[in-house]
Length: 219
Image 1: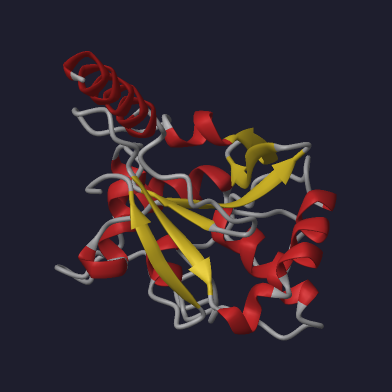
Image 2: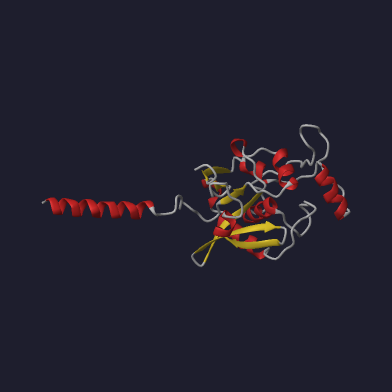
């Protein structure tokens, strides 16, 4: 009887080990919006300063989760243009000193879930389009939040899911334009689009259209 009890305990221990070896969070769903706290120097700091994100967190980038032949990928707009990135690469792009991805997961509310398949189809037609360096909603180039905005708007028959409030490139502490943006737009020979409609990851994370359902940085 003792040998049988020992064997059962050993079996239970093995089963428990198997359960605990799973990924810490696997509740992925197509169309999830991943909000990233990136470390890209002065640019990221300027983006994060103008709009605090969900629960005061700082976000400088976002992308939409898609599934390609059973593999989780992220549709995103980066400096190289619109592209599809493996989820693992996206999650490990920026991590804490403990190795946790600096990412929050947002999920569209039930009223918008039906838009996701068409939004992804539209977004994938934009792969290869250039990055929108001028943050202009009227050109044929895309920055991260803009890509998600237009993909969902196309699926929603032209009605926006996310707001496009006036953009600001000024430090809220001084009301002066961040020097990094002055240099950036001067190099592009463009006027700073202060007050023009736009989006950023922090503001989008506060949208009533979605819920933040997981924080990898502080699980």
